[in-house]
Length: 163
Image (cartoon, rainbow, N blue to C red; front, side, top):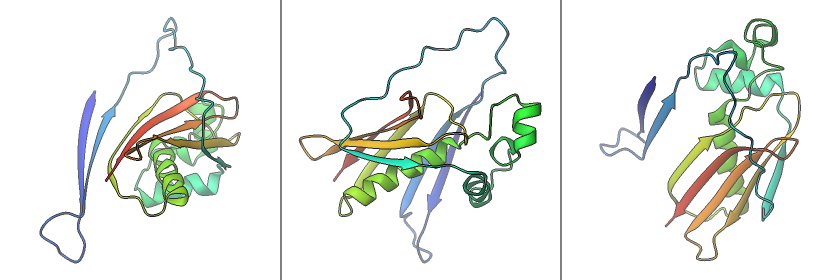
């Protein structure tokens, strides 16, 4: 199933939104026993910026609360492991995207983001650290951001255009 969600953020009752955000969400059926997972991709090795993230159950619970996400795979370890069969708590895709943008803000605080698009490629769990990484383009108008798990696999890929 495909779901398109639109969020508008306004400041002080402004008529025009300060931010418009679209989410294209894909809900997939549970994998069948004979499904072959897509091959993993190595994360790029040319990071100019790199920050280690140590996810824990408190971070995931708080992000769930902040975003009104009641899915128990993010904060209920017993449910995530015993019912859903995950090895640990699932790190939210939007949390990873938020951390990617935070990396850009930390490394280039004065830039103005025009567009930000990301794609989750592989799940991450709270069992290991992961990395948010980035490399600005030579033209100064775009930035490549990505997340890598503890083993160096690409888990999220993102593109930013700047003003």
